[in-house]
Image 1: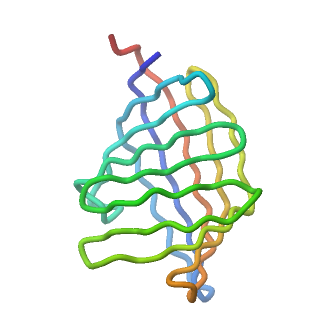
Image 2 (image 1 turned 180 degrees about the vertical axis):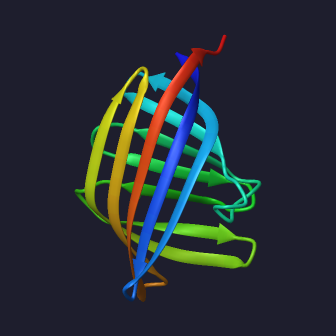
Image 3 (image 1 turned 90 degrees about the horizontal axis):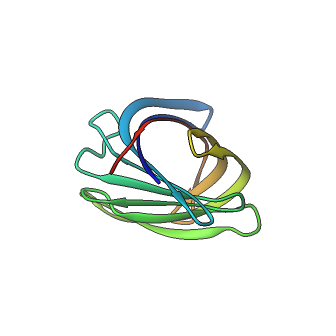
Amino acid sequence: MDKKAVISIVSNAMLDEMEDAIEVVSPGRFIKLDNGYKAIYEETEISGMKGTTTTLTINDKEVVLEREGTTNTKMYFNKKEPSVAMYQTPYGLLELGIYTKGLLVDMNEDGGKLEINYAMTIAGDVSVDTNLSLKIKTQKTIN
């Protein structure tokens, strides 16, 4: 099942008691998989990643966030173990440590919501606490 969807993304990041919030609503696709779901959307200028396609592969225990385009990365979010991701930007390569604190998945074939609360280290140093929230609302099936 492959449906058109409206995907709302809210990202709140805290660094040294300063909050940075980004909210984006983007058209995309929502696909039911055998063991979960996939959400795909194009990044915008607001996110600072215009020209990048983001794909989220979602199941109850893990979320994989992949970006391809002007920014490239593959990030794993699961509560069992931390992960490391290489984050390629137009300005250079960063090593990110990802420590998932909370993962809430409430999805069905019509969409749903996803909440990821995580800490991220940059080059093993600076720590950023982030809450990523997605709401997906499907429209019609794509043939």
